[in-house]
Length: 378
Ligand SMILES: *Cc1c(COP(=O)(O)O)cnc(C)c1O
Image 1: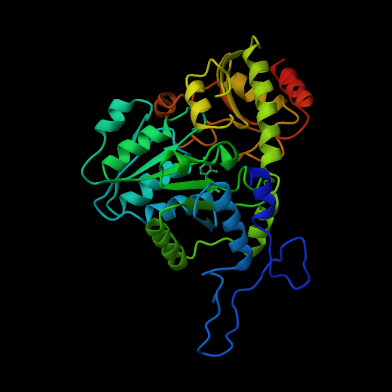
Image 2 (image 1 turned 90 degrees about the vertical axis):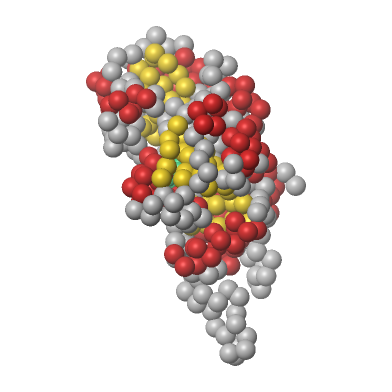
């Protein structure tokens, strides 16, 4: 079966007595026992829930994994991966990792005696040199946030495995429609399902997908103990959103490509970062490891902060908001949003210049979106 068919049919609920076409929401905390000898499965919703099971089965199938765990947020998923670590371990992560991931790997893990090194993974020599005997986890993100850099996932995974480290990838920006990192040799795929997977900006959720049963067993056991699970209703909403992931991603990409080309040709735009443009440094690599370039476009307006701020107040369809991947177009200004906690110098080292803006291209009519950007660029 191909992607769009799986998205609709894998999560079919086969036990419904009324053959309802839409799956039921098992809004229950617990399940009755017939007798003390017959423990029900699931036994308690923190351990399992049929609506969550349907979503996990579908996501595992779409990410080409053997199993999936859905969690209360993308950050809960990152934190769960870190439960594989112990005091004295070392982590390697990208310098332009998602802000929340950076904060967790530094401020939280530090308290447990785990150290993290942040670097540019496209510089293979410094990446290789960063490994220590105690490096247990390599975290990757591609395309990255906000400058949409592409990391060679297969090459990074191979080096990490030779050093005996687990490899996790944040696949939020690509979605399973455009990239399946498990096929490239990584161990764990992480999603903020809040973004493209749900696609309607009405749920916060995370997901982890894997093939290795030993890793999976540890992640599941941790989630049962930590209790970082999503609600049955949210699982139902995400399952509903997931059915249209393929059609949504095709349209996000189609519009993003046209918008990137429009911006690249505009005299008031100093630079455009979109992996679908042949001028993007990661374009060839993206063509090899992805099936498309997704719907995120970053660009720099001529000038600095004042020009960028003025632009964000002039757009009518692109609303200023954190998050991405929904049907509505959003605009983000990393220096005061995702990268506000960093100093100016740290931001510049990550390519976050004062003129940088990030677009999540939604599903509105492409001509209307271009018209909106055009009038805002004035
Ligand atoms: C939003 C996001 C996260 C965090 O997910 P939440 O669902 O907000 O907890 C992690 N990584 C990336 C790339 C994101 O965009």
